[in-house]
Length: 213
Ligand SMILES: C[S@@+](CC[C@H](N)C(=O)[O-])C[C@H]1O[C@@H](n2cnc3c(N)ncnc32)[C@H](O)[C@@H]1O
Image 1 (cartoon, protein in one colour):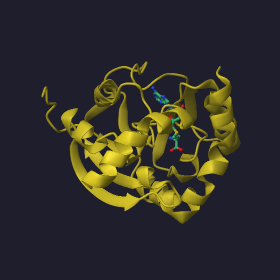
Image 2 (image 1 turned 90 degrees about the horizontal axis):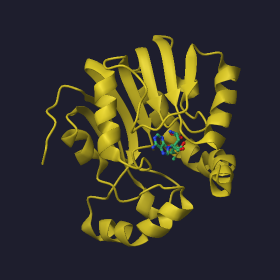
Image 3 (image 1 turned 135 degrees about the horizontal axis):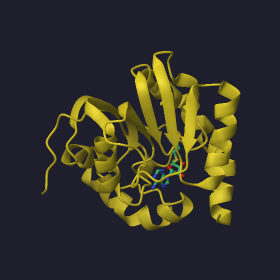
């Protein structure tokens, strides 16, 4: 367990407080209102989404590979008495059968996973045919000037942010993985540094076609 991982987990909720209050929490609530049935959340962190899962969720499985985060998540899961389990696993290797979930959730995780392509392939595999991925992700800017800045600062950002990349074209990756994006909104992550602000919020289904390009 790295010291930086422990510090990041201990400070995460405090670091995010302003951003949550300035709009992120509202996005979580609106997005997760659409969760139902068997739900998988990847990279659950400290459990920021837990208050927003509606009653129509039959069973919630939250994965989190990092022990210091998982410890906090476990505490929050116990407090909420949700029909939920915590599984310590990376998104690249989900220990679930094909077609196990109706809905998958990724919020601020595809920026950090080691291998986004593999993680998305795993998400598609464990969803039922027609299953939905609900996502909130900060992404590479569509403005070339800001995108260039994101490329320049990414090395430092990644070190400070425990592996978080600020320049990933995540929407493209979701589509290339074979998801069809059915709802999409763009926003700015308030109270965050400019290179982390471009935000996408949306829903994708497994009905797209995976691209080998
Ligand atoms: C920025 S935090 C987001 C936490 C939470 N999802 C949220 O919305 O607040 C990124 C999370 O991804 C987790 N993570 C890192 N590598 C991962 C991987 N390979 N698979 C799944 N989660 C990962 C981190 O441990 C951390 O909890």
